[in-house]
Length: 526
Image (cartoon, rainbow, N blue to C red; front, side, top):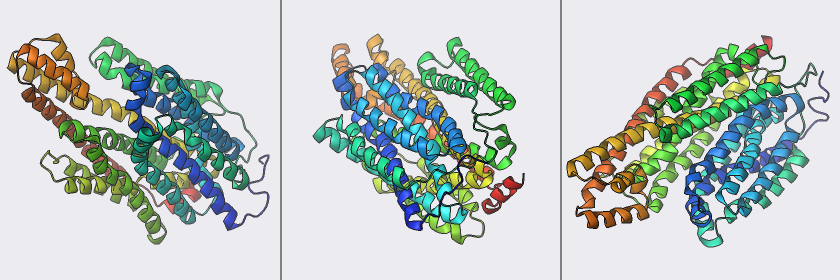
């Protein structure tokens, strides 16, 4: 028997709703932070310098989040989720203050890593807390939708809000805005969220060696995906990183099978539904990463749109995720087989990403917005259901770690998406620019350096350098730029084609999911 009974006293529906509102504030806090920071980063680099650390502002957050997600999910199952949610909000808020006070890029990267610890802890327990408040699966889905809709709405408004705050209040304000929101969320969660334990046998030990091996595995995977392109995918060092990452992952998995208190219990993966859902989580993370990071590059670098125009076209993607989640929440209680919603979303995603492959510079902007809306709408039918399905597929004492697994696999999918899409885009871009430079018979190391990265197509400083070189060497730069744009467009189109294939795989997997309302009962019997 656990040291604390699941509910010390009956709770009113109003108290449960108040607790959900507190969790929704926390989700809005993390969603806003992830989206407003990207808009502010160019201004940050201009003030703090250190462009070489630019990718690590996001990578540090991603790495620590991926590490803390499963660890906190397991700790929440053992000790109750409330103390970890409170601690994570406080840590996230304090780290936000440190980000806002950073005086150098290295300080900002370190503070972002600490912020990722808080963000990972929040994600590790927030969604699982819904199952504590609303045990009935059909009632729970309504409140899962509230969290997904809150996250989606905050994500959709984040870029515009970040741009406005950066321009009018300075880039530090995008971090300081978290302080009052964090304080309010802390008070609401502390007052209304109950502490619920499902650890019936009283064994509250945890495998800290496993936690260390998990951390090393994630760090190795991140270094491999982040550095693969700069090192060179054919270099021995890159394959050494690949081998080291694979060895650490194997060591972690082997240790989990022999541990008495594993971070990720191996019996979870004995459940075929869990295996399918975690694979679906990684595929959705990979596709979402390509849509969020490479479609804007296509619009700005390939089609020469302004950041404002690209932002307007991308907004329907994020808004539609929220709309799809809300409609999904209305449909789940009314359908005899709600598990089919994931496959319907995957089928729509196949169509949407296929249409995205046909987009060109001459495509009407309204049609591009419609296609991106379809992409977001389809993901709105998948992302919230992955959490709902996996919570129904496992026993109550594993709800936290199962929910964290979905978030972790999505994060890892995003990491691999960065590497795969980056490789595809770089190969296409470099092949096109090499051919263009060879055709012009221009030999200049500085010119070759400019055309080494698609950054040339979105940075005015690099384009001005190109124009100066063109005047010195006596050639017309417009033809080279056009060829570079064609190479970028082809690369992103190939990445979108890969997304079509992954969406097909997602559809085939999702068609084999069992009825989710029966899964919890089956897992409890096992």
